[in-house]
Length: 383
Ligand SMILES: *Cc1c(COP(=O)(O)O)cnc(C)c1O
Image (cartoon, rainbow, N blue to C red; front, top):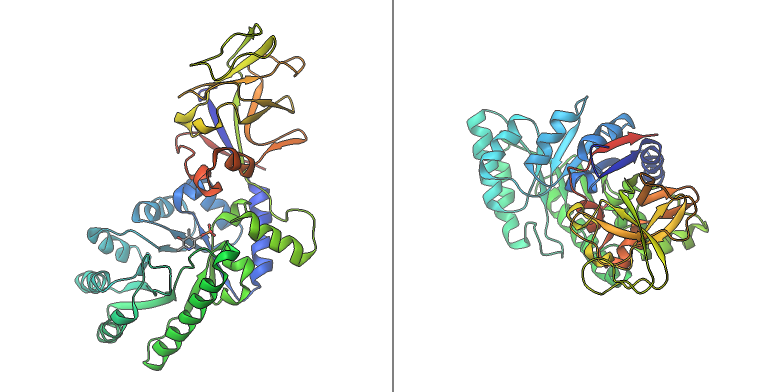
């Protein structure tokens, strides 16, 4: 084993989740696979071609470097859309490669038109509207100017979409706010249409909006977390489960994170283990050293809290999670051997360690936990 841990991505789970999403949105709505954050830690290079093999032809990323990685790895042409950061110089690059991008302020709109003019080409843009998130998006006050600019530069700016993003569709607490954003969006889109500004698609929904607010589907949904088999929040899950009267999670998780037992040690009752005194052996114990620590994304807050799987059984983290290693208590697991597989996340036999359980213990959001898995842990694809 060259690496101290490795990640497996399930092809069949992705296929299953994509078809679940398609069932939710129906045949008329386009699916954009959101692969920012290294495909939520799954590995953009592994994930995107698999999604494409399942018929996905639209990808959303945050920045130009991710768009470039997609271009390099996708076997067939696809629409690539940058939702966030684009440097001034990268705008030209994006136009040359027919990469679409969000425009949310007059400066970017002007830069896009100027770059397209220089290239004797057209910038393909999505006009992002401010509807209540107050992060990015054209404010009502800036819109008239944008409209006249768009009209004057049709030759160099092609409006491919009009969009917005909801501020927390995964939480019922934001219900009114999401609905207000939805109506505001529709109102502005209608006003734009009256002035002659129309786009082939409008899109607003992330995973949570797709599940909880079907009216937000419009022309396209931008789905991240659910594609990976996780729910945006427990609320979204519970709401779905009760509305559809099912008792089983309809999604499947793609990721398994594994390591091996590096060493075993018998420790006598009463001894302190590892740094400091946070763990004192409550009896004679057998501890296994696992070569994974916080440098690999295994949060230090899982010290004395986390669990892993060995031989199909749970073993608790004993003591502080170190930079590159941690100890787990395997006293009750028969026949444990050095080199035994250790599952940090995912299934082994009948047991599983979920991202949710991890998240609850470390107070990390499932999004955060996944995207923090270092890119240099090797990813491989399994069935
Ligand atoms: C990340 C992101 C999404 C996807 O969100 P999920 O909750 O993972 O589905 C959609 N739209 C925008 C603008 C985003 O930044």
